[in-house]
Length: 200
Image (tube, rainbow, N blue to C red; front, top):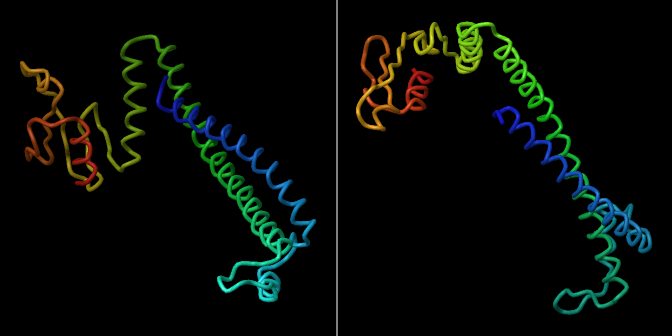
């Protein structure tokens, strides 16, 4: 499974979980709304609540004495909390759906590239298609690839990356990086070379 597909499926699962959460939250809100309507606090504004709570009889610890007032106070806060939860989850779903559109686009581009590579008539054509895709990825960071591992940095400096072919496993996974003829390092991982190029 390719990266774009993994990212797309991750957002799909996120939306599924959020949708399930929303259903539970809406069910809870329905119950809290009924209680809020029963105690007349559903449409109560913050100002109206403050005016009301100021008239409620409390003990020396500011605890509400009347059971009915305690229920009304609880109904007010429970309703507002449940309503806020539903609104928050809806916002999360909206954001996830927005990301899903972008992920779907990337996923479809990845599938199209795979199809082009599969349909390519020769190894050279496959290499060219892969190289063009790689050029687009590097270009997102302002890097221009002229061939597989050489080109210009975002600041216009020439770079070249060479794979090391030593006897050790580490050496076979490391690279040498040159920028404008200057040796930056002679044994570093590819991701380190990319960061150096990106920031120069």
